[in-house]
Length: 303
Image 1 (cartoon, rainbow, N blue to C red):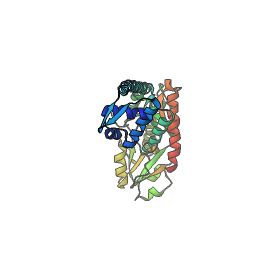
Image 2 (image 1 turned 135 degrees about the vertical axis):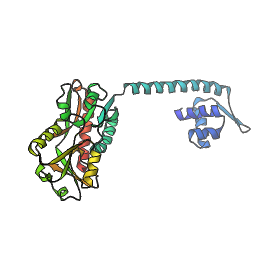
Image 3 (image 1 turned 180 degrees about the vertical axis):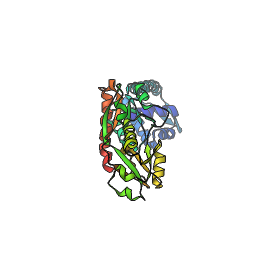
C-alpha cells in the first residue's frame, strides 16, 4: 500500500467517477483502476463497486474512506505546521545596496548561494546615497543588517565595523569619442581644460571630502563642479560635454558611450560590507559576507 494508491482511492470516493479522478491525479483511467485494485488486493477487502456505469463504495469502503480522509487532513495539518515552524525559524537578513552595475552582476549569485548553502532569507533594500534615508542611521537603527558601500563611510563610526571586499580608488568617466578614453590611467593634470563633474553623495564620505580638499588646494585651475547623480554624470560624460570623477566601484563596462579610466592618485577605497560592531561575531552575518566575497571573486573575472 502506497500513498498514490490512497490518494487515488480518496479522490474516487469523493468524485465517484474514474474520469474525474484521472484528471485530478494526472493519470489515465486504467492507471487509476490499477491503483485501486492493488490497494484492494493488499488490504484483502473490496472497497469499490462499479456496476451499471456507476461507481459506489462498499460499506467497508466508506468506513476506510472516512478514516483515510481524517488521516489525510491530519497529515496536511502536520505538514503545514512544520513548514510554518521552519519559516518562523528561518534566518532573515536585510541587506542594503546602492544598485551600482557590479552589484547587479554579483548579487543574484549571492542570493542563490545563501539560499542553497545556508537556507537564509535575504531581503534587499535600495539605499540611494543621494536619497532621504541616511545609510548610517539605517544600520545603527537595525533597519538593515549589512550595507554594501565604501568602507570610509563606516570607519569613523565607533558603533560600526566593516569587512573589505574589493580594493579600488577613483576613476574618470570619459566619452569614448575623447582620446583620453584610450589611456591606461590619467593624472589630475591631464584633466586641465575640461569641465569636470565630481560625484558626491549626500552621505559624508571621507575619501570624496579628501579629494575635494586636494582639488581646492592644489588644483584650483581645474573647473570642478559637484554632482550627486551618477546617471546624469554618465550622460554628460558620454556626450563628451564633461569628464566625471567617481569611485572606481561605479565602473560600468556595459556603457556604450563612456569608458572609465583609472585616476592616478594614491587613494585607496575599499568596497566593503558594513555592519554593527556588536554583530561582528554573528555567524549568519559572516556566512553572508563569505558568500558575497566568493561571488565577487567569480564575477570580477568577467569585468
